[in-house]
Length: 412
Image 1 (tube, rainbow, N blue to C red):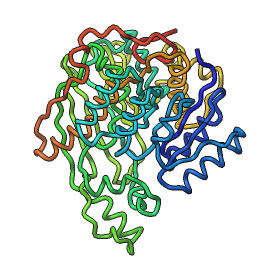
Image 2: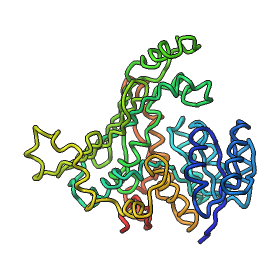
Image 3: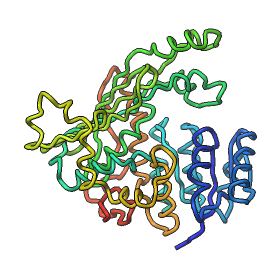
Image 4: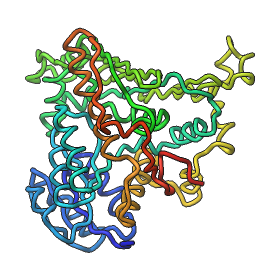
């Protein structure tokens, strides 16, 4: 076991800097030894924060290859734009580093396959840092599913439903990659927040897999309306945005379950991940924080509003062991504490030289939704088929992670 870790952080925009300040620097026995960004001002800002907080001056570079070549670096955190996630992760695995990669969709199926092949050829571990897999409600529902509370799972739903009009419209000023994506692509571009927890509920890549999807996009109107009102002098005022305002994707799984994903980021709305799990004995619904159990709640069939927020009644019995321990220790900053947990899970694997709880097969299949949805939308909602990134191993994989942060089994 390696107690003290030295890490490199690649990508220091809004997300990278936030994680550096709120998660990586406060963590014990983790030294940020190197920082990298294409913009010098971001690199210098990050280095100053590292030195002020932890006393060491990290190595600074604009070329990530210099960091992955450093023998003292145990792991790298990739928080760059979506476009560069796969390439940097692949190169880092080839250099023998543990890789923690931020979320986002893929651009080509080739890069998804290359992630898998590189892992299989090198044995290096690459973890998608999907923090929502460690959300309190998501983990409680996973625990309830594993305990059979909802019976046989039939259907799941989720979404990335988040008003990002300001972020996209100011993408040029803030050097944010979302703008170029919304101008040029039309797809489910950010699938993993909602799909990650669902994939673990449905045992995707471990006894089940996604086999096909269909995807449809609405017209694009929200950004133009917003820019005309808020930024009438902007060069984007008459821009033609490729990205539809609402994208709906339906996935079919090998065992017959269906998954509905919704991307809704350019219309006025409140934030939601729309998490819903429905089985033969009951269901969970995020938007009204409710649990419905067959035989217990049927009498509220037409008065369900009376049961909204009843999820708290199930905390004591079904809160996941990860969150029970976390609550006793004190929940940290970062997306309701999820950031701290996903990084704790990653660094635990690095320290113990073990597999990661969200592995490269998960990463490839979840990211692939963007590529497949783009194809389906372009074909008018035609079905497209999921590659099997495990090459058949999903049928009887037996390499379940057996540790506190496992998402494949409940470790009390």
